[in-house]
Image 1: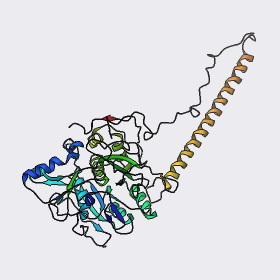
Image 2 (image 1 turned 90 degrees about the horizontal axis):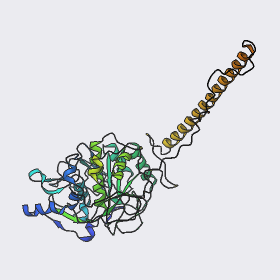
Image 3 (image 1 turned 90 degrees about the vertical axis):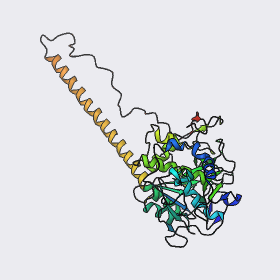
Image 4 (image 1 turned 45 degrees about the vertical axis):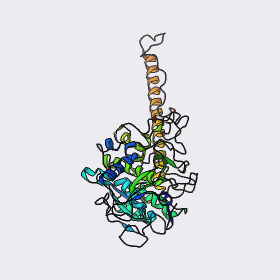
Length: 438
């Protein structure tokens, strides 16, 4: 992987010397769109009839974006460079690795060019805006907070670093507290060595598949992986120059597709939380029919391959605030964030609220038992008084009503079977054709 400051890009474009091309005649432009197999696999034409990502800003934390590229012009906002401490988030250098951020931006929000944008690179969310951010040398905290504070509702991080920084963990919590979903790649060496930020609790971690739906052999795997997406032979905008194209492999690309899918959902369902967006993506993901005998989440597939059309059109309950996002993490991580920056406040308040509710129900149940007891005692006393004062001192019992009914079960003592966690192991994962039919 190409070294970038303290971070590493999750794409092997720079290593493979992937095909980097200048603008070409119309025949080549047609071939370029044909080569974007991932758009067909993700049913982009049908997706765009429902959502194009309009009104959504995706924060792209990477090595810079060429805002003048013909397939991106107008879709890239003014960003921030934390490496050079200025507002110019353009790439630096002339090697192919410098085009990594431009490539990810085009996968997310490329609009193509020519008549109806039919030429060049088109992204899965072509009407979304990109907020480009160069992360610098001190982790991701400043970049994440900048993205959150400048209108991004989705953050794409198609790179990693080996350091686990407390301020980065806090920044992830900050993003969730402000309802911003962070998407990051699992890595590209085919191991279980998932690094940061993909390893942080609350991040949606993405692995890669090829055009057949098989997990890409270099896609890192582990319990952190929630989704997979196209990761091989991905066409994208390049650098330098304003019309260059490239082809590459990597979980970088898969991450960008999932970020784009999240942007599509955010545009259609603006009231969903970050976790509820992830919930839609997870609940509608598919496993190829060729994959048998696995339960979900699988350490390589996660919950399956992202299916944006289903995520946009299926009737999916909103679910809990954090959905499938693992906001508790390991023993050293923080819990679900609250509206502020505290990582434990929300969980503590929820627990306290639950305890108060249980106490209230117990008191209410005791009160009900006491009232019922007093009523029964009063009825018995009245019954005896009427018996003793009845005419002629009747020798037989006098019945004043139906025999007492069987005592009702206290509704506050009923045993409630705990509901199954919808994100736990599923014995029959949803299967489908990959790629789906348009």
